Image (tube, rainbow over all chains, first blue to last red):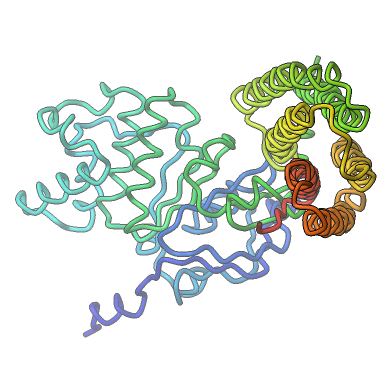
Length: 262
Length: 217
């Protein structure tokens, strides 16, 4: 009989992301060109750049979301901790460890509780007490427990946009991820909800590595420890956020962040 | 007008005001030393009263820079340009204060004959006026070499200060009655020496604006 526990142990994910010479094609179009990056654990790393520069495409490589895109071909080395995620890795296990939140909040049309419990249930957790615990922990993790504890049975679709987005973060947290990918998570939100998501990210980075794609450069300066600037599929500059925004090394970064193009 | 063009207009406005403030500051130093040399009490009083104008100029540029920071959220070289301007006006304002202080001292000389003609003080003034001017000009023109040369030029000012000090010590030794004037001359020389230091600060901010690197004090 196969020892499942042993198999799980072999794919123990770390929290840092290491990419070497990544290239990605959508059919004939080369969307990523020789990108290498070392993303540190338990920090917030922001990807910035004009639309179509490849930043979201690159983000989606980290949990193999691009596998779902027809005609997409990826080369290069992607490691999370020591695990080669394009090797013999179980994609479901990878996505449990690398959660994702999208631009538009996408709660399931079910109750708040069921949204958060959905993931754990698919993993076979059925005990009410255990699910209750996960739901509470995840909602607390997303700073939502106090505002939602009396509305757990209500439909998630009745929540505000900001609450829905934080619920999606809670849902991602229910899988106990090591890394959380956020693809423009606040672009559809008002400043107050944006502030809450940013505070949440700051709080979560104590435990989780966060990679965030953002068009809002003030957001990057507010919350990101590291910032990477992409242009036309290339990683132009990557480093300490303060350095990138105060004295960028590359003229193209300077031109983009000062609004001279893009 | 594009957002970028609007921003550049606002920054140009700061540049123009900075050039005007710099010119007024140079004039203040020049007049303060002329007032001393020519024992022109009216000119000395003029420098003291005009210090307010330079204070106001500083306040106005400061407001403009703060508004740019608030409204435009500049980053990279834009951010450094505005930060450097904000820091430079503090130096210029202090320089003008020191010119005013020199004038206050020159009023204390009374009608007695000088114990020594202030030719070294005049030389110091000439040097620091050039340094202040070139400091601000190097900012406007992004002339890194000119900005970096200020430190070397300041060495000459320091040497002259030492010369003035030695001369005055000799004069006091020769005749202790010279001490009253010697102390006043010494203070003036010290103010000019400090003006040289402020000009070096300006050069360091120009270097920061151009490269992102600010020398540790």
